Image (cartoon, rainbow, N blue to C red; front, side, top):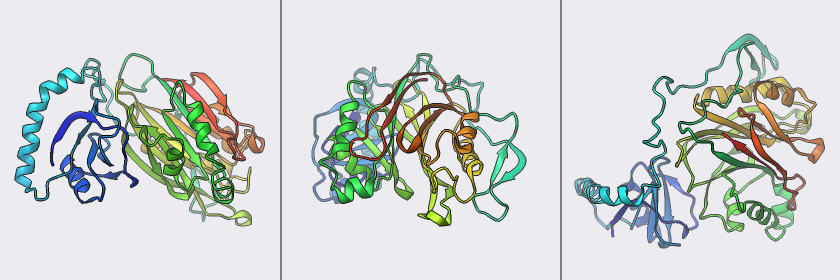
Length: 386
């Protein structure tokens, strides 16, 4: 019990409980000790997430992302834990340097982060004008005339280009998963089939009540971490390539009374690429109803609230990607306003084109309509260069 391996991941073998935040590797080891069936664990040094394992799974994979090990011993005093960690760190230093030379920390030591650009929010510049009705919670400020999120030059810290493969997919949950019981895993099969040979880096799902099920049905649970957001949206990211830096959910809109299901928001995550240090700010949105209405506060308010979310949460080194079923086609002000401040890279065909992928980066090397996989929407994918 209690043995640790610095710089190693134990891929696969996850027990069926969601990964949880753990402030330290000792806390993760203790969580494994008290969890029935836990024989090993992997702790993310940046994400601070704890992955409990039924065993070592597919083996030991050297990677700078993680610390892995066996569950804590039955009784561990704090001082003993600190001493053990210090000893293990000392013994592991030479092995880590030798074994993980190809798996550096998220910011590569050979390409240090720029010192001339402080890490700070993009910032929001308001014109002083508001739209959406003064008494509505979802009223929004109009951006100032010089404000924009377009531009990919600051994305990341490494000199070389990175290809980023993203997906957006409305899963039609009530029908595909509840009425048809998953249709034999058809949506997950589509994800798996189209994720080769180049795997998806980040995927955004709408009408998704259980991201874990979608990933698990495709046999991808060992490769992806996931975040389940409010209002049936979720995302998954490839954990061997990306570290989770921050996450959250902000409400931005609301359905109109004529077709009211509730509030609508943006599920967001900041991620850092392990090998290049490049950072991505990813937003997944499911827009308000009725379709092409803009919801309670209207098209422009929905667009500006999404943009303000990005301005407040993203950092200047982030490449921005926003995906979703916006419930607004390309002719609406919602999409047209977003296209003024970001680049619209792809639009689908379902419901007259309500699914979109936007980015602060204009360059893409592939745009794909992947079919429906049993949903009433098509899955869409874009490969960007950042």
